[in-house]
Image 1 (cartoon, rainbow, N blue to C red):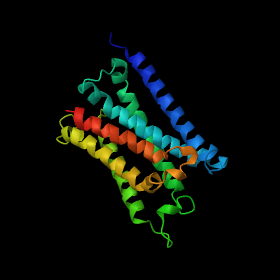
Image 2 (image 1 turned 90 degrees about the horizontal axis):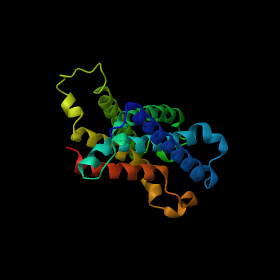
Image 3 (image 1 turned 180 degrees about the vertical axis):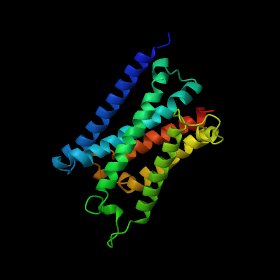
Length: 217
């Protein structure tokens, strides 16, 4: 039986809520309970980490549910009908992540990304460029589905194609990789033996990339 729009909306709300709860709980436990981050950093620094992980998980879900179906892994209509709301939510969360990140991005907070003279390191520059390009590409993708977008726009088929989606995921993975790979290689430093949030998000994106590469037409 095909779910009604109301049911699919309720399912999307549940998926989004559970993702946010998981991501925020992970950030709090890793960085504040097991890690050294003080509780006063919860409203912005930790919130930003939880929001970013939620955004990447929801973005991966939004892109990957239909390709999973194409690969023969049955995805219920409730999940498929929830993709639009999940996609909009992931974009909204990414907007918040970008705004908070610009507010916090300074040597006192993200010292490893800066040289002694205050300039960005090479890897930080690559990470920021990947993030900016990924966000810009996702914004273009999001706009292509809005009612104001022209249906006969010659760019629309490319923007909604597998190649463009894979490019968005690749740019997002680049942002995450160059942001945190040094910490990934040192498990002994992981707070509570929990992988960094950047690594968790990267794994989700890589899995999503493989699914979209294999199952998206």
